[in-house]
Image (cartoon, rainbow, N blue to C red; front, top):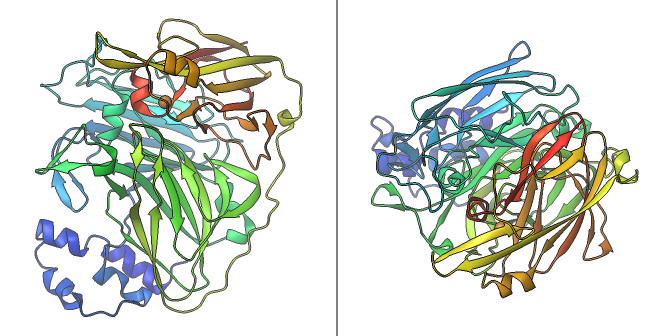
Length: 507
Ligand SMILES: [Cu+2]
């Protein structure tokens, strides 16, 4: 059910002040100018859209009759982002970020992905022999088959060709926020930074918590960007980059005093870390990486390494304006991510009654306390190759080799992995000491210990940040799907330069 200001905001999302200035959209200038500088600071929510950049969500593509039938065209044509039309980006269907795909558990996904990445002047990255505009699609966090025609990241879709993904989402798939992006080794960093990323929602999860029935949802895709002379700029140091929310700069998000909303946030950046905070408000976290927690918790800040998702409630305080921001986070010598405003929460309008999220949301899965079939040791380290003047990144002392088989894991078993960010080996090889966010495909995991000390797990996850010197113990149950896939560091420059390894789930 929509209230009055929701309808107005939806209808007016394109009429933002900055967009009008940059694009000179005819016919609406008078309407916008009316509100220019004349409105009081504490706006009632109902007038938000006429005077600010209201949050806009990417176009939504929903499944129908048990099938999501959609087409994604990866294109290099100019795109509208941060209120201007820029060149040099790569996007799905000309949207930054791409369309949001919404499916139900049990749906079949039939997705035609076409590669129209026209990059005549690009050369392959050092040591790589594939075309820099090669394409494929990874369904990040999804518990689906890694084989064709599903989440197969070894696939190459050449320029001018398309590929028909066709696979089933399990009927018991957790509901939550996932995302999709290309995963061709060597060009992932460039392609995701350039815009190729979109949200993927599986119905259910947090939105089905009885206390949250009917609450307004906000989908927020955070992404870093640098623009110079109307073109996407590459090689810009982290402190000089800008940060976008759904491709906008600090858009306004309306809420009534006492109103509870469900915010579903993804870090779609190629490398940035976001340390979220909302002035005068807290977050009650209900899901992480697409999986509902079994126990909710309330916090003032949330750290999102690249690829991470959190879903949490926000309840509007007193009428006023509050900055939604990242406090900044330093992940190492090349990761000085500064504080930045990501949005403005505008509280106004009639009072609403807050929703109380229960602490207990479900039960921890049985594998958390079940038997362990195998233990593995995963060591992250990096070095510097002086002759190539390039850093390299390793897992267990090796850079990624797509043709190797990697760890063989028996379907239906639970394993325990210790993930170690090895400073000693890194320093010995002349590498930089920095964080590495571990991510694995097909199955998620539960963190059970950090540096030998047990930690309380609130839910499962598919990304965990591993700080320098840290040892993180995780548990993974390999259920339902066989096939070969990868685990890797989600700082995409590290992944592209070797910090990835294969594993194969076997019957
Ligand atoms: Cu890394």
